[in-house]
Length: 65
Image 1 (tube, helix red, strand yellow):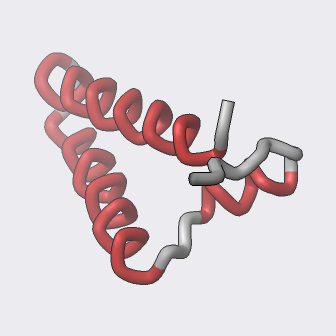
Image 2 (cartoon, rainbow, N blue to C red; image 1 turned 180 degrees about the vertical axis):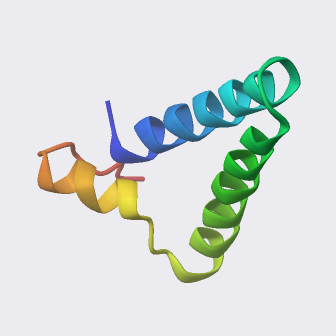
């Protein structure tokens, strides 16, 4: 599995989980959804992703086109 796939899986999981928690537990969980979205947005422009850096240090490989 590549870094990019794991980042997408984590982001999707966090968005869906925070939406469910926001609906059924407490609306403050929507802030987590906003945080994940903001990180995805800035990563698209800067190429910097904290999770990707951690995954690379753990030895996951990069996708090569």
